[in-house]
Amino acid sequence: MGPGGQPDLQHLMQQAMNIQEQLASAQAELAEAEVTGTAGGGLVRVTMSGGGEVTAVKIDPTAVDPSDVETLEDMVLAAVHAAAQEQRRLAEEKLGPLTAGLPEAGGGLPGLPGF
Image (cartoon, rainbow, N blue to C red; front, side, top):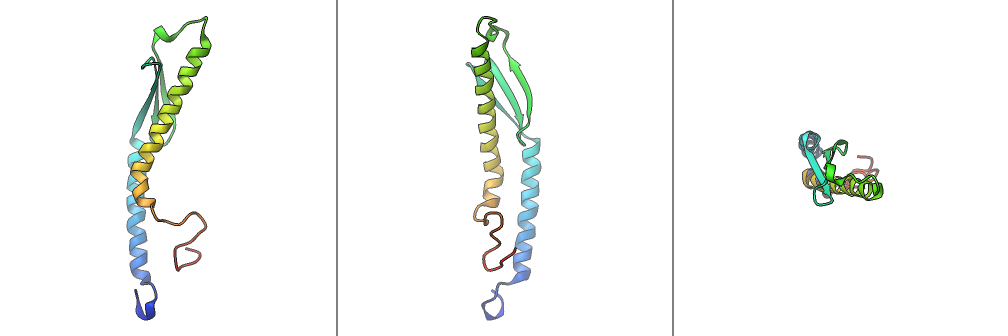
């Protein structure tokens, strides 16, 4: 705290800059990461970037049954969901500690409206 119980703005700005640097580093790590979701006991594999972009879909030939396309579609969808869940988990792991306790968008910093 500064004089008169006011927040030390220089200290707050330094903290904000440190968090911003850590956040940028975590985002870069996340962007380079890949996660995989599987379904059908591994017959369908979906690879997704840490940013949430699907980068590959692999389907074991034994999963392809022309008379039962619906099951294959369900397995692809399940693998996409599994990859997305893993991507969200990874994002929370990388970014969660840096954003914990920060105000929601538009809320401002405590004691500093508009920041």
